[in-house]
Length: 241
Image (cartoon, rainbow, N blue to C red; front, top):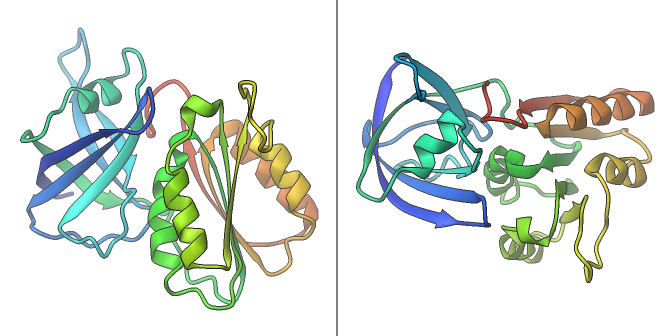
């Protein structure tokens, strides 16, 4: 697979432990990918001589051909997050990709349900910014599970998407909310079970931890047959471990 080069142009802290990085493509100057796909880096591992591959989904839409946005969380002693959190604007990085079979399909006229936990929102963000401008009669729903108020991000952006696209609705549920939270509480799996009464005319995209993907998949299959596309992210260290 070809190795590509890019320059770090911006680092943005979205929460206390989640950061977004914007990359300007150098070689090639533009990159074609499908929303939902990932790129991978070879990163150093403390105390070892070999490099380790770490993959990160692209959070920006494909029409931004000359740049890429990645969203990632800090993991103590995690090779991937240590590498990315150590970057600063002006640094040049090399990566491979795009790759991956988790990507947006042409599901029309099915309604689309996205379910994410944590930074599993990254590929879904790319999908939303691609799908919503083209969606007509489809109902598009995002259910996103986070822990507490300090973990919230992209809330204003999601609200703006809802205003621009009335067929789109998003809901965040917090598993460990602080006092004052008035939204849904508990795991996102429970929210799916509450909201989804039938899977008729549905296409579903799941991205997050393995337990969520397994539980939501089993629940949906108990309701009938529908396309389910899945990308498993890992709890302890970056996607692709």
